[in-house]
Image 1 (cartoon, rainbow, N blue to C red):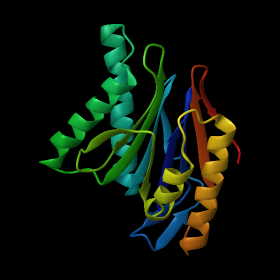
Image 2 (cartoon, one colour):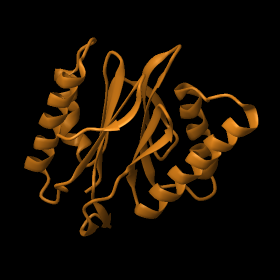
Image 3 (cartoon, one colour):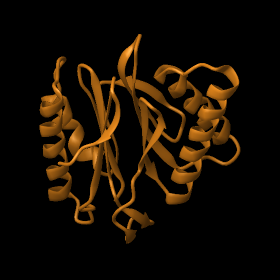
Length: 193
């Protein structure tokens, strides 16, 4: 049962995604999939949805971002990348839509940390916290209650632990493995819960 969670803190963004790869939501064939891809040195993308669409679309975005940087000799901001992703989803929506929902997190020297919520219908919203998948039904209230303006990394990890515990309590098919990544001014790193 796909789930992803994102939290923006005062100088970082944390993204977490379960490790399940399933077919139709009932047949789980892997429990250790890393659904959080690095887009650049300071941008990460958490994906939820059908395995093929999730992987194809995220790799397409990753490669096109690299091409943009090589051609223009400039780094795309997180805001710019979010809008590029939204545009590509909107174009695909009219031909062959990608069944994938995304959380984009990143930090820019000028703009600071940013978290964007993007769904398969090309809806884009800048948020302080967000979630996708079945787990979103259970964790958005926790995130709403626990999030505060100057959230530290340790406080955000505590909130994330509460969210994952709630998903394990409420979802019978919740994946035991979670990948958690933090992006800040120093880059991307994996965090153990």
